[in-house]
Image (cartoon, rainbow, N blue to C red; front, side, top):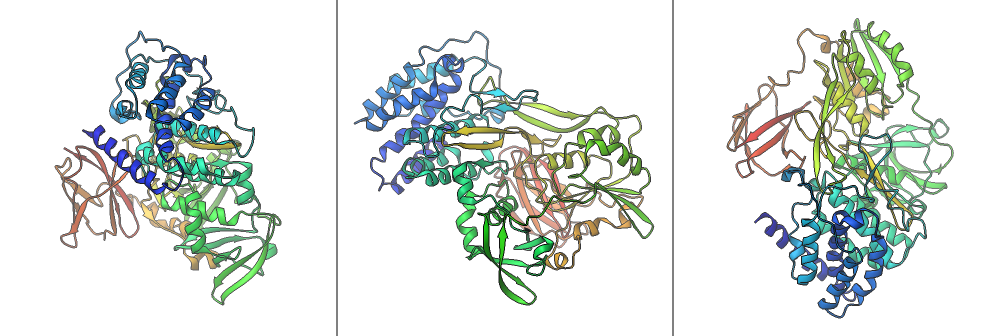
Length: 635
């Protein structure tokens, strides 16, 4: 029934989308391409001879596409598909039984499409035979990076037609679309938490890629296509795209503060023109709101704040030379002219270790972005001389947490559960414990405070996941970029290189991180006023002697209780002394779910999830200063 509902949804979407593009000649061609993409990927990853590299499957598609486009009817379309599939020859039968994989670890559950009426009996039978005879086997199109822990490598086997031209012909543009769509379909662990169904996205972008009339239209279509996976790791690189976007930086940095695009750092040479705390209202002569509306579709991000960060990065970068900038501050709105390319801000030179004494409380502050392994022996010695350690992870660390583990924990740290793609069983995943370090008999025990915000991404988020397991650790800041895990690169025709996360990262209790991020215990963000006054309000909040009390300030289990747990659906949130500002419900994949709620009294908040299926869910509760996660079992 579930498969049937999904099929009907896709069929309706196809009908609507093809109607939208009815002005494009032969819209039936787009429908054929939709099913050809699925046929091509099905054979690419399950046919024995294709997996062994005995057939050039890219060229087989390119040979078939003219006949698919010119087919006068459905019979000729199926003849073209059969001819393509027959290039691969007969697939070998497997002798070993396939391992059992639960639906939750399966990206390719629904293969009912192979029996769609668009296919002849012969094509459907051949597709069925390919899947029925499949066995675990290496595939030339899916490798692993050398010296990696099974990080998938697509680029070496998929370099064909990568660098021929920035504007490939129609068939090679289609190859690019098919190559990327199928890699995500089979190997992307977060496919089911995209905002839009991945089949629907294919329907949407087939016409855009086909009718792209020049290199820029093609590259922008592919950029927009890759953004649809909702992953902050969805990097995109090409000469055409870089020429359009520009590559030069201005003499300032900006961030999203209080919903505004605010300048946070200025090169000394332009400090007479702009200041920290100025609000950008126009850049390059365009209103910031108009730019956001037009550029957002090209801005990747796992959550809203990550998308906004991408947008701010996009508008700062540009072509070399002078550009107008309009800012708003206490004296009004002003337009000034600056240069991209020179001068530029250098790297953050914040020391990797600082100390701060406040009311006889002695804090040590570690800047994880500037801490290297060579510094660790020195820093460990200094840990012993402070009352509390503040780990500032509002940056990108250098892998030093893997070394710090052996000073901070008694045994190897179970930092995560990892959902890994099975390279020899496309579409399937398996769980592996994320263990790091060896530990020590005498771990350092100091009050630990962790700072993070939207700039905290990937390895930085993983670092936070480890640090917060230190007993009594306190998390201060705002939600992170919500993109964790190893990334892999994919090469596409037109000189395009893209990336995505191909490793699912979850907490040890399987709480999701992708699209959710690391949630602070105390929600603290900078203000425009604080930026103008040169204050680091997040750090100021952490530099407080109250964190050093004998009793932990953060009592994660006692502050707010949620019951009954397990539940049939009705839940009571006991607010205690806190005011609840927001409640969200997520499934184990990090998808935000609808639910019913109302406040009964000032002390209780009632929600109802009875409409959800039985399983594990996460309730995210935001108070005035804190984000609290609770795991709930629905039966």
